[in-house]
Length: 200
Image 1 (cartoon, rainbow, N blue to C red):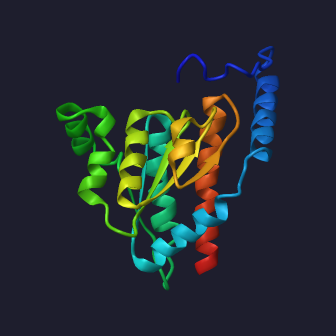
Image 2: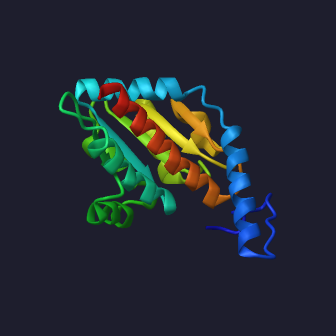
């Protein structure tokens, strides 16, 4: 986390209980202000990938990388039924490959180069970035756009470049890393459970 993780929010730190209540209230307020207009298209894109046997590739940095890894559990295991399956893969999960690209080429290429190795027509990328400005995230979106690949971004703060460049975006309008990541994780659960129930 950097120094602007809570730049516009002042919580009461007189007691842990007060802090917790204010944190939860701020999270609730942020949730109610999310623009979900792209969500139906996101669900449709993931459903199409499910139907065609395509893969959803997830990625993120820091805490968002953990959400990207967690997504694979929810999308692959959580969406599996006897009738259909959803394939997903985290570009954060192969540490030797991730670090080799970062070391031998550049960290900003750590995701886009993997897309070059893996991506096929019909696949989707799902990027999780609080700032929306991480170079490796933006480069991955640029690569996908150049290849006609659908990109889904979960963003926070002001959304950064990812908000404007991705095919679809869900933006969490708050300047607090913890709350942004909490809501991003919840959105992954929402999408996975909705897709599962549609195909149950």
